Image (cartoon, rainbow, N blue to C red; front, side, top):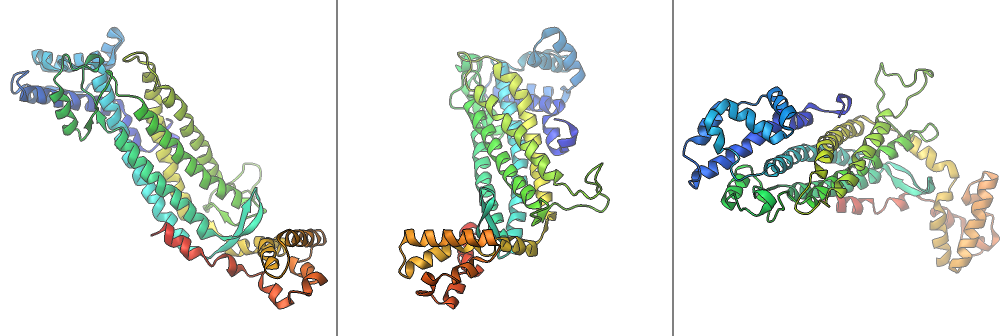
Length: 430
């Protein structure tokens, strides 16, 4: 991933030197276990640990000749530790190291993502409570529907990210496995006790059954969850972008003192951060399909998944971390305009109360079909003549015969639409 969309906390996890350190940790844990059960001499692990050094350049140099990254790694370590190197990797296969390491990197990355989500939940809750009764128009198909509140909008996003928090925790659990089962996963040349020891040492669970590789349905699930979280990021970003449009102007990204919006038009204040989140979310979701394709490998294993995961492992987690961090910044600093919300809500001069009026007409002797036709007719009149729906309805003799003006006027009450907001908030923020 390019530095522009990366944070060091994540990129460090995927740096090659860190990867090789994890490989060494796995090999040392396996070596310790072999010592414990008497497969190799005592003191080997301590001696290896004291002399082993990670030299990325040397590993690359060896790999150019042998065309195998794990062999190159083991050879470079053996050069430092001498004859004791023969006790490393006994009975193990490359996938034991690669897959266990990959899961560790995913877990470490996901824990940072989980922290990102927790920060977003905190700011969403704060902003939702602050704007709990900031009345605004709700829209369906992009058109004015009925009143809602900006706080309720944010509460909806909070609930979604609360689900994402749970999903990601489940995804971490799903890929927290370790496989040290040897060629084709039969333990023919490696004692199962070694796998159990390594798993415990590295805070993982044993993979109940592997085919030399850890089953890739686990990883498909993990990357699918990242894709869902990216979708949630974009949903908020799109809402902010739409609400920032000039003709709406209910919410906008913070615009700093020296910031410039356009090279050609000095007046522009573009929602560039939210647009950026849409683009980054597309990237993260694009990694889901290849992760799903990785489930189907030939027989006990092949390496068609390898090149995919070397890309999507770092890229998806680094990108999503950057996106979540940027979203938190947007939500913390965004400008919110309650007066503009009210102005927009009043644009249709009461048409947004049409359902309430129709509902009340059915209580006063009109059938449902009659009520719908009456309200729809007056909605058209009001819209075409730029008058309020109340004025149009109050001129109807059929309505006047059954409903007095003051009672009709009561149907145009905004508080009617906010009376259950506290109930919803109690459900969401229980």
